Length: 600
Image 1: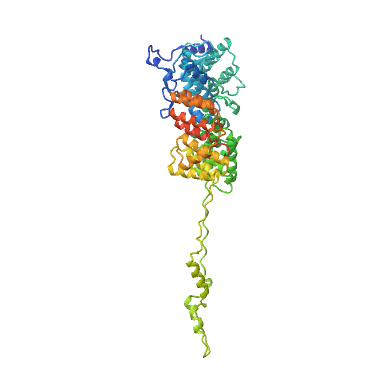
Image 2: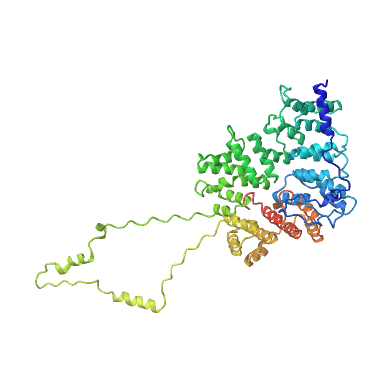
């Protein structure tokens, strides 16, 4: 008779040995150039197909190996994502396979799991020490593509400890717990040392009295933790795997405090949109026993509970935003989540000290009307109308007064009483005539002069123009006039001049008076901080090498483009416009103002 363990082993061997589908020889799919595959959505802008041409492979390779993938600003995220996910013609030279591997690595580190899985699976010559197929399979486990991940077991694989572990996991995912236990024992016999995975597999069958805590440091950990329903703690959220954090944020069964932490990481990396971010937080707020542990959670709780006063809610929201000022990505993610809470607050004595902070946050969230509201003083309430006078206050009617006048008095015979106005002052009339003749009339009362706007209010108006590609001409002129009027000292004048320069570089033409102001007040001390690097970016754009433009730009901006000199950022923005990345250029121009920080 077959033992239970032997039968499970036979089933496992059959399950993992059968091909998932027939092999198609000379399929046209094998002829597809992996460089030409785009992983962007249909409506997403892409870099041009010749993005890699015009540069030596060795130069591109050096730039890609040094490329930043962490701590990116939102504009930098857009650029690097398009670099890694856009399809195009392959670069020339012998380094194309190595460059393709670097492209896959960049997609992986950006958290673009689907693109990275596809690109790793297409590598024909992976770098030494890199098991590209294992990377692809593990990423598919994160994506929930368990069948695709397990199908990889049917292809010849390198000798590594990943594949014995995957065999055990795939058996567990198929519900074959006995087969999974046997596969894990076989893996351990081959020298695989993974005590956590063994414990997780045995926990599925109830053998382990003390199951391990969940782990989310890999696709195997993600899949097994969820399938074995292991206990999840906030410490399990991986800080360096935004793709796994995004999957945890989207999973409804993730514990609330863990879900909001994962959502924060994924939102800052640009992997979930603000609606997904909001859903993750709202599910936590609705959960029984949820205890806000961060300033952002406290702000969301204050904005949603309906019991906090305006002052308390404003204070909580402001604290979360101030904490997020450490980086533009953190500030933008936090602002997008708190925009509804800010919209409910009035501009009042309880909130006016936070008005400029809230205006900047609404710029980050793309709520331009709300940004303007926070720096626009409310209209004064009309004075109450005077009450109608009573009859007693008015007194007798004119005819009654006349009836009681001197004509009706009893006057002795022979005495006459004269009535009428006071005697005429002929001397005064003559003096008045002389003044009129000489034209010496009193001056007319002048209309009150409106006070110029505060620099903060004018700055917000200028930021709105910079962020809005569809700003009207009259709005542009009004914003320019207000910013010039409010720039009352040298520091503010230089900041205003930089703003007008960024308008121009982003495609918004400043009016004539703003151009004159720009030519006079432009700062000269920081006009260029790295002229050679900026000119190289502009030159790469002229040659059509969009990939080089992106790589050099992200290297130079370094997470904070506001630190660059005016000439440098102007050249960079012009280069981005030239390669068809105008939307990223406008966002980078906004970040070059340092708007998420304090006022200039």
